[in-house]
Image 1 (cartoon, helix red, strand yellow):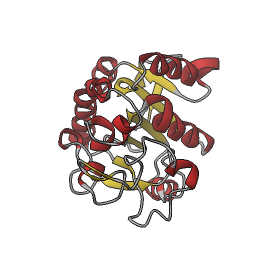
Image 2 (cartoon, one colour; image 1 turned 180 degrees about the vertical axis):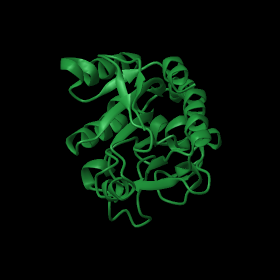
Image 3 (cartoon, helix red, strand yellow; image 1 turned 45 degrees about the vertical axis):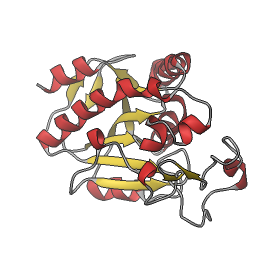
Amino acid sequence: MAAISIPAEPGPFPLAPGRTALIVIDMQRDFLEPGGFGEALGNDVSTLRPAIAPVARLLALFRARGWPVIHTRESHRPDLSDCPPAKLSRGAPGLRIGDQGPMGRILVQGEAGNAILPECAPIPGEIEIDKPGKGAFHRTDLQAMLEARGISHLVFAGVTTEVCVQTSMREANDRGHECLLIEEATESYFPAFKAATLAMIRAQGGIVGWTAKLADFEAALA
């Protein structure tokens, strides 16, 4: 099928039907709700809430077309054997990774806080990846999954813009994928960090990828 031109910066993004997947990064309770790891780091988690509805709209678009959807969770094994000491030291004492919080053990697989928000939750058939690092490719099978499905283009959404989203986009770019970030479908605890990340991604002719407005993406696919 012919590529679909998506209005974007620094120029049109050539979306490839049949070879494009949506990857939603870490829309977890531990980052977006009080009592999780985001709040333990001293953040106002309400700043991430505006991304929820745009992510849900993107999910609906991809599901309506039968295009692949991938969800990631930053999470660790219950014994924390996949969490290095440098990461374990982050957060307030008593509210660090693996500690007991209001939603269970923080960032531990299977705990309530580790779950993806209901508004953005996976449905049967969608890929779910538990990642121990910030990047979606680090110590996961994501690249093999994409290759097996012939995926070359990735549309990104999720949180936070400057940490896990940007890291995953850079990893994808290094592996040869064309990457588009939907601006309203990502948020940061720090608005200035989001703005800077969008600028970095699309700088120098899109050195990491493209960014686009959700309305423009929806109109191009209509």
